[in-house]
Image 1: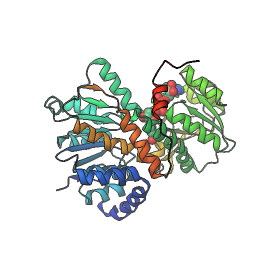
Image 2: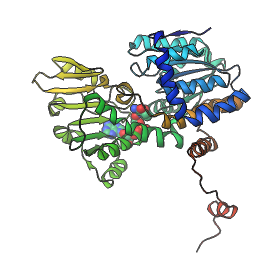
Image 3: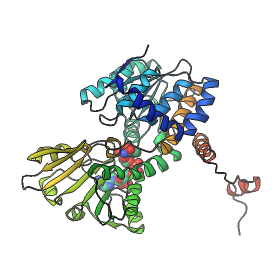
Image 4: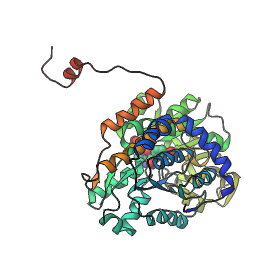
Length: 422
Ligand code: NAI
């Protein structure tokens, strides 16, 4: 029996087409790992709950976990990122799904609870809402050992769990998959970098010659700055970390405080994991240029102060799907993408499948690792083993027909030794 609540079951055929596209672009997750999982069934008798953006790529991960004989539950990790056609196709394959595009906050947490009610053994989270809910509302699942361990997909979630660990309230072994090299150096940089294209879709705007602010110069934002410059924009980076700011400056970007940059900015894109990157004050709103486009690609809808912008606006007009024109009391117009939520997922399809192949290859192998090592795991943050990270990297290279050199024994001893010098 499949458990589900989704938007529209009649969208299944369209969802199958989307999954077909992703399947072919994710050889590591959909072919190599899945083939072995089908044979070895490493996830037999295991229930996995994923609180993830329910996109076609997540569908591929779910299929691979199911091939390993896991019972899979999915709910969305963002109210606006669920692809309703994909959910319709997945329930036909026996994957339990509680997700639909545009759910309210209350519905969002209801979906999480449906997944936790299934008594999962492994939680795969994206942003931390499911694992935090498990701590707050399902302590028995943790104390009984029903939850063996958890995996976190994004920077914001990892930050939340580090804070919990520091406070001594993280009660599960937590693998920050986001921090694996095969994840954040590709998914965050390339995926979110390309995500600025969503801003173009949103407003159909020409980037060439525009003044674009990119807030942050971390994994996601440095990728976004690079792509915006590649499209011909004049890019200004804003930062709070002096080293990241230096990196941006030496990469040739303008660097300055956001309040200085705002009056000239045609487009502002944020991906910092911080709150109120544009401060929610009338003085700050007055600095915004007439016609400016505001888009956020960070996890939560608080980087661009969405709530306060809505309160300040005297009129809000939908311009196209998930794009709104906010008219300020002065008559100034501001265009807000995706209600301040992840613009790349809401306005477009999220990261390209090729890049999610590595993230989800890691998630699949980490689920297997957790089952194999369950007796040894202790509560707290545990790094993804380097050999699993390297393995996904090598599989990806192989799938692309790329070979690399191997260290000789002499080279290995040299770089791991100290005796040889001048
Ligand atoms: P990161 O830690 O590599 O970079 C964040 C950067 O923002 C840091 O350099 C930090 O110094 C800077 N920053 C912090 N507060 C700032 C402020 N007030 N003004 C200017 N700069 C500030 O993090 P990463 O991996 O780039 O992730 C950023 C956000 O994007 C997170 O919320 C993460 O969860 C999310 N994310 C979104 C994805 C998407 O598909 N849209 C994909 C992956 C991550």
